[in-house]
Amino acid sequence: MSKKDILKQYQRYVMPTYDRFPLIITKGKGKYVWDTNNKRYLDFFPGWAVSVLGHCHPLVLRNVKRQLDRIIHVPNNYYNILQGKLAEEIIKNSFEGKVFFANSGAEAVEAAIKLARRYGYPKRYQIISMRGSFHGRTLAAITLTGQPKYQEGFKPLPSGFRYVPFNNFDALTKAITDKTVAIVIEPIQGEGGINVADKDYLKKVRRLCNKKDILLIFDEIQTGMGRTGKMFCFQHYQITPDAMTLSKALGGGFPIAALVAGKKVSNVLSPGTHATTFGGSPVVCAASLGVFEALKKERLIQNVNKISPYFFRRLDELKRRYYDIIKEVRGMGFMIGLELTQPADAVYRFCLKEGLLINYTQRYVLRILPPLNINRKDVDRAISILDKAFQELKNEK
Ligand SMILES: Cc1ncc(COP(=O)(O)O)c(C=O)c1O
Image (cartoon, rainbow, N blue to C red; front, top):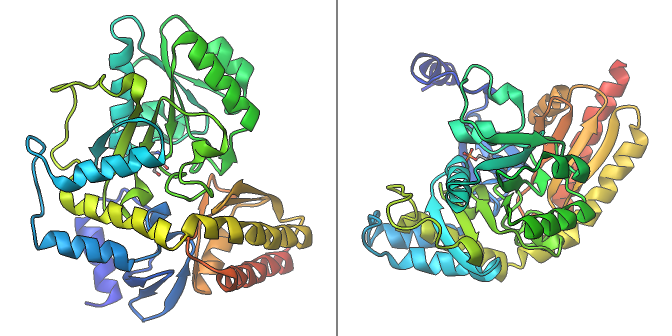
């Protein structure tokens, strides 16, 4: 099938919910993907933070292939060995509690909303989230998301949600009422433009939640699984949330999500209150166990902490040279944003042409989330392409 025919087929049969670039990816291995012309791209945004080990990691493949020969699906009215094993792995790497498995980020967020509602029932139901946040596309998740653009055309939305500016403790304190049951925060806003929560802010929020018996829920769907230089981002802040949502990197490319509920709320969702047919099926759990194994065996979180300062140093150099184009370089570990003084799509397109995949969000922010197993040479390659892109923009000015 020609490239033109594939695009036509999409046009005719696939709902137009995405703005797609005309790149057809046919193969992926490690940090690279290939297109229909066999052109190779260095993928510094693999699967929107999903392919944390790069593409088709051998340990993920080994576990999945092994499981496919045994059984693909086990319904949740029975037990499957891998679901319990994975729950234990997640808990041992985060905080004491229990796990509910789902299939996508938005579903984990839905589960978190239901957990909070159930915890507060019947007196408290209100959930506070942050402006600029992103929590997914189901009706409750777009309502939790503090960006009106995602809610347009879908009203009436569920009630009981309030929004406050990110990193503003006074505004948060003022928004709390006797109906407030939970506060939901991404410790680093991803889609919102790589906005990092202040250390002091989150500590104060934790104290406030303790005082008022409000649940502190972290959405770690983008920040989790080593991306920021710790297994989970909350671990940078010396505080523990009451619950957190995970997805994306959790399955190393396979669709899995989790709501991790700390001890206080781990039995709130009792039998019959929540369910999903595919949640925690053995094949995706096998994949996820492969991710945990690879993170440990290959010391990938250590690698993030080794390479990240170098990456930031090189980006800061670019910022110094292109100070009229790059406004700020920010982020943590391998969750990196470059805020530009002009729309970022031109840089994105230039990089794509030169064989580097990155992303942009909020129109002005380049988003770079490479796999955790890159080295200095890969960083140098990305920097040299970005350098050329900024040079071209400068020449145009
Ligand atoms: C922080 C955060 N929460 C929730 C979601 C929604 O996840 P999904 O697209 O798997 O439903 C995303 C997706 O980008 C996200 O970044």
